[in-house]
Length: 379
Ligand SMILES: NC(=O)c1ccc[n+]([C@@H]2O[C@H](COP(=O)([O-])OP(=O)(O)OC[C@H]3O[C@@H](n4cnc5c(N)ncnc54)[C@H](O)[C@@H]3O)[C@@H](O)[C@H]2O)c1
Image 1: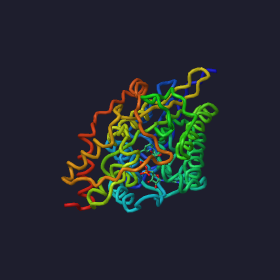
Image 2: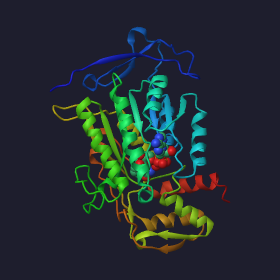
Image 3: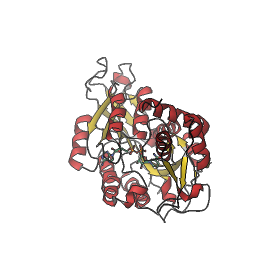
Image 4: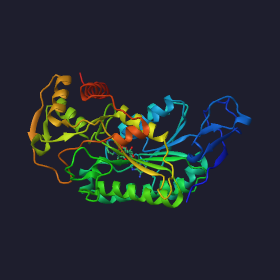
């Protein structure tokens, strides 16, 4: 069945702090992907200003959400961000990221749990409707899913469903981009990992929830024609990064002169991807909503990686050089749920979105270490 082209116009509510020159009543029109998928001011009542509906970013106080919101704002978009400040890691770091965003007039923040249906409905009523969503909120981390499995189901599955339900009931919905993970490839041995590979053998509950998100999205796109793109991120690093991730853990341990646990006796390789490259991929994906083709639902999965599998020990050496200190390495066995190597095939991502990562670890690691020293006042 061929989908019909459509055009929907909505009236913008004035957002406190927004440019008063923007007319509160000038409609924004959105055409369906079949009709070009454009967002524009209604030409008949055009105020001459390029106003677009705000993008909803979930998990905005998180590492990738924060950088994504900043990029969108720098491109002239308005952003409404939500987060529940989950205590998985240092909440002060999340609040500090947010304080940067709150300084931007084009940004609004609502504290809520994405799995709370009533709170989400209120958000849509009061700040929306949202026709573009970047859904990044999640209980992240492979190892923690061995300790607190329930949080993964609540946020990653129930939360994902709630976000999709809101999109489903939004007329003229344009595109939902959501975070999946390279962990869905589990113990696959064929490298690089391709979106065409079998991913039916997750080896952690975290991976199982991310794969479940992909399957839920496939069904919702099929049933309700919601354009969705799932991005499989590969080990993201950079300034304002997550304290549970290797670069942060290594830097902290070296600064403190503490033992640095290195798993699988250092025989680990990762496709480390710099956060600015990841954000470029997220924003490029948002601009390319998939289109229904015949019986094929408007849903696609893309890898977002650096397409280089870097040796973990090389990564550690770069941190040592930047800090001018030697690491006190303690080699350990493999952690359950972990994989020895990740490596992204981004052929399809580049073809669809033009995404091309540019940052090497030799460029990215020093930027992280500089931020770390500044933020934690390391001399
Ligand atoms: N960073 C990586 O290397 C990486 C790799 C693969 C996939 N991902 C995925 O990318 C997304 C963003 O990751 P990140 O590194 O920014 O993680 P993050 O933990 O820094 O950010 C996630 C944010 O979501 C918020 N959150 C958690 N549960 C919530 C809930 N129920 N309601 C509202 N907010 C909630 C958290 O407070 C946090 O600020 C996640 O979906 C993650 O699984 C990240």
